[in-house]
Image 1 (cartoon, rainbow, N blue to C red):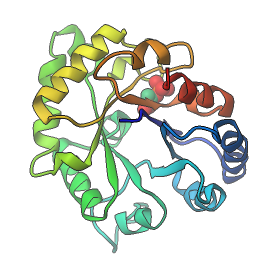
Image 2 (image 1 turned 180 degrees about the vertical axis):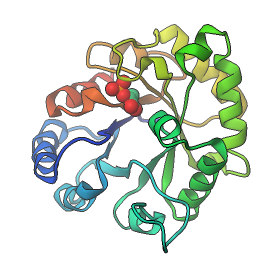
Image 3 (image 1 turned 120 degrees about the vertical axis):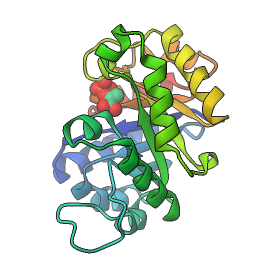
Image 4 (image 1 turned 180 degrees about the horizontal axis):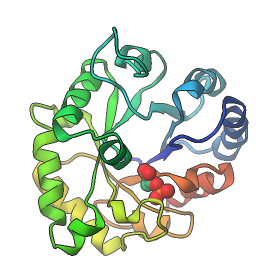
Length: 238
Ligand code: PEP
């Protein structure tokens, strides 16, 4: 399977900045056909980026959806709206869980809605520093999987293992730690693609991707710069 390298831009980039990134980035990766490249910008940039991408080798994803199709849900993005433009959607990111109080049951509804609308979810799981230090990493991840994936067809999902202590901190999990968790995840879920996320950079992608069960990366900070993100994409082919 080709590596999957996804950019999570979070709440960054205006439309102008997003389109300018895509113009540069398209050039930098135009020869690459054996990496599944996914960009997940803010909702306001989905349409202009969709138009700018045309039939390029880059896929588009949303950062979140609500589980209802339409109605009185101020501020939310419907799966119907997302699917007009995107193939992918990030669900259950630790910032959604932590800042916006999303629990496993809500995340399960969003995963169901994504699949019902032919969107491939990138389902994020991972433990906090406190849970890691208490030796509970695997228990936490197992619970997120069991509750989040209840009734879900796991053949159609991507999982991103993102230890919270490694997100935006510069502290990447060592390839060994990540590999151990990825193989644990596959023991529970089966053979799904499992991406690693948490301070991935051009300098560490090569070591991470060498691991048997690391199938790609979900990249935050280092995906905001076209050159740096293109180097991560290229590093994933080694
Ligand atoms: C993320 O938020 O999904 C992420 C992995 O962020 P960063 O790469 O900045 O640690």
